[in-house]
Image (cartoon, rainbow, N blue to C red):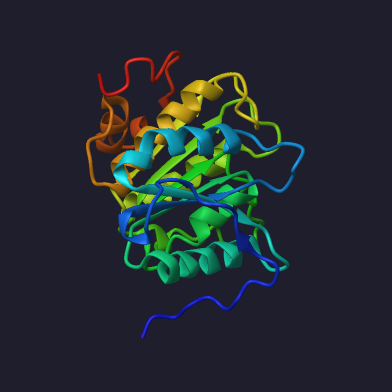
Length: 239
């Protein structure tokens, strides 16, 4: 029997955005996991708006996960359980930024999750006595990590190392680097959002990706894990 997360005290799902109508019209769900600071939301809000516009016709619903009193990973697992309760057996993408990106990666083992998007994930630097961030839970999931090369708050090298270990067990893992951008991914926010939307729609609905994502998934390390995000990405997306 599947193990379900206990109720996350204080956690809740924000208002649904995207597909409208009855529950039966929902064919996929994105759970947005924000960062640790409300003052630095990163690209979460514009991503939510873009997903609502791009995925509504296909039945995509987006919920922000409101953080409760437990761990963010626990909130993500609870939220995935709640999606199953509300919408039934639909694919779920965990999409997180900062601490939410780490939670998305950590909670990927939930049976409803088919894909993970981690934007500037805040990962811990292991000491001599600590184990590295786990990656077994990413097996069988489609994984995209996006990190700015000038991130002073979350070392991009840590996400590269995690992606390297994940790629060994899961070929559907890729990572893009946003050159000269910082933790908030503000300088190239439009490109980051366009890349994220392309990945989410292709993953949740098992559709085609844009050429850069396809190439990144197919390329061996380190190429597919240090893929540069091109300026202007998304202007001719899927064109």
